[in-house]
Image 1 (cartoon, rainbow, N blue to C red):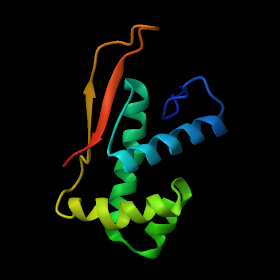
Image 2: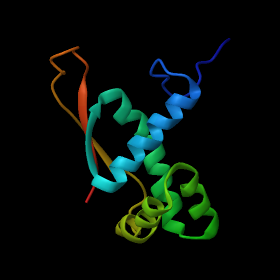
Image 3: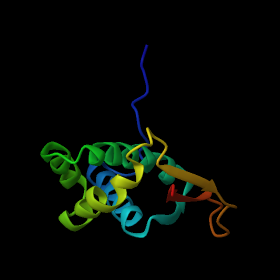
Image 4: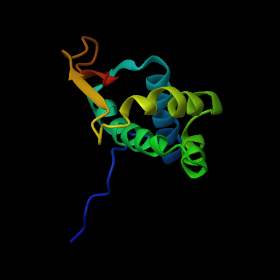
Length: 116
């Protein structure tokens, strides 16, 4: 029986999809709240949760993991500013709030933010 692969494709090739995820992650870590489509918000949630969990350790391997997805400036912000907020929290670092559909094409929209 064929099993479906994990993750959404967004009608993009692998390189474009990876670039999209990296840019959404970067913007969320910088602004701490972004508005995007519901599917994109739910997809980047997986990567954001993993990144914050890794950053909580703060060691060299976690820093290198973050540098795979983020620029050095943003990775530093995640390790020094964002991760310490969640030291006692075991997960659920993000919140997805559903909004009404976009008027132009009817896409479901959402706000994804870091929980305070």
